[in-house]
Length: 102
Image (cartoon, rainbow, N blue to C red; front, side):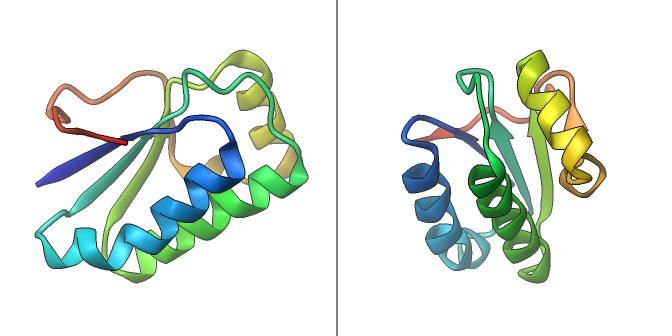
């Protein structure tokens, strides 16, 4: 089962909430976590750090983790920070991901 989470502002609050929900998602049978970032137009180093924490928490829980639909400036910030490869950035939502949360 996949879980799609639309990331909203404030970014830090949304991502911290996602991080706290990862154990519940795993227990409910979720295997893939997809963060839809299309609404985010800017990320600073704090935001990137929180996003990396979410990715590592998800992967440590055994979930496959992806970030997609990033704005060009956000993708650039993620790539320049070195987090882009870790986050598994995709250009679009995989077609099998249908559930939305948050």
